[in-house]
Amino acid sequence: MNSETIANQFAQMGARFRIVRQETSRPDADYALDIRADRRGQYFELRVPTSLQGSLDLTVLQVQPQDRHLVLLVRDGKWKDRFLCGHDEREWFVAAVRGHATTVTQAREALKPQVVREAEAREGLRAGERHRRRNAVSVRQGEWFFVPMPKMVVNPSQIFRNEPIRRGEGKPHFVAEFHRSDGETVQVCSRYPNGLSEAAYQQVLARNPDATSWGWIQIRRNAGAFARGAVRHPDHATITLPCWHQILMNTETGSRPMGNVAFLD
Image (tube, one colour):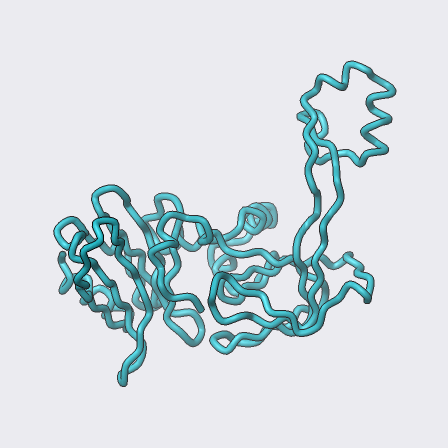
């Protein structure tokens, strides 16, 4: 592996990088990308089992020194895994990226929930605005995005105080006011893609008996988690949400390279 070249590219954004080779007899052992710390501070560490030392290849696809971000490609023979490595507010981070991003901008966009990307496109936000932690569409804190719902009203009895939200075993983000909605059951087909309530659905069937063959499916609409007030986390600046915001996680969870990220904030 070209470890010296990779370390130099990490150094361009002010970070340290090292490779640790691990002895193991497991043929299915995988590598792990982690954030570690010593007396000099944090650094990126790639732990590589002996079974992969001859097949693993690393490439930095792009580095942005001023922004302190880079995109790392890890090939292990079977997979091509991409990671956005960088500095966010107070700490270094690693984020597994889905798809085929080759630039920092593409990786950032790939990490956004689809709802956020679509809203930014509708609003016509410029690239610089899309990368801000707070813009007209959403507020971001770490891996969480908060999308404003200014007309939303919640029954006070359904509000939880100082509720933790977390991904995996990471340190939780604490939400001052939290509400979870199960949503509503609606019937959906190609002619009614936004869904119909049960009453409206029955009215359509009464008017047109052939509507039973339109390929209806039942889904839950507007289900989700919502936050209001202060959101706190030790690694991030506190944000304050003046109205209810829908809580959305970035797209890391469930991606193939996510299993190789050992560090969670």
